[in-house]
Image (cartoon, rainbow, N blue to C red):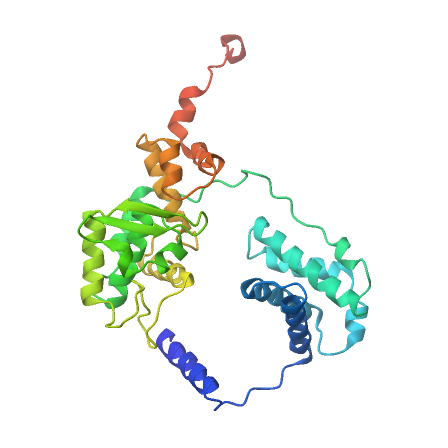
Length: 327
């Protein structure tokens, strides 16, 4: 049960903060990972989020080879065992993401080699996948499917009011999840009917027209769904403790309503709504510059990938085969 799990997590955080829980002694594998994380922090100066990715890959590798403190297991590790880890990860992620995992494991193996725990040069024996520029098509949904997903959201509940407003913002303006979670009350300019967005990649503000539909759903959420608090973030947690949401909450909201709707949507994140908006604008005749400015693309090359899905226009530029070939 999701609600009970959230209560348990909240209680664990509360008890841990007040020192009421006795933490279990870390396993030998976890001790090694903690030493690695400390090295990444103090020596390499990596950000916390990056250290978490490195630690996750290290844990998966140690679990796969069955390390429980016996250094002989590390000394005898072979490249095929690392390849087995990558095959397992490859069933869950794309080739581009698998490249990151390869980089994490190579760094971990260099760390172990520097301490004499594995053979040197093992990191160079791991092959990496070769994704090619532009090989993936945009993750676009038919516009009728997008509208059906929004219509499936139960707006009679507090969570439904919040989630509908978040996903409608993405559908209307092509916002990223972090731009939705970072939206503040002062960014909504009601009288001039403007919406100010702080672009996460370009670090430059973007002022958009506040449409009637967006204004109505925001008012509905702010009046009847948002908790009474001094926090300035627009979108807050539904379950206690009250506080601002993270970008992952937008993703979880999308996944939850996709499951409830029963629609044939195979994508796991709301990024497909951004792509769907771009394709819709392209088919309505909007320029590439306009389409690129709305999602916040820094390069026209990022926008040109949508041209590959503009099938009707591509058919118009195709040349007819010579008659002698047809015969």
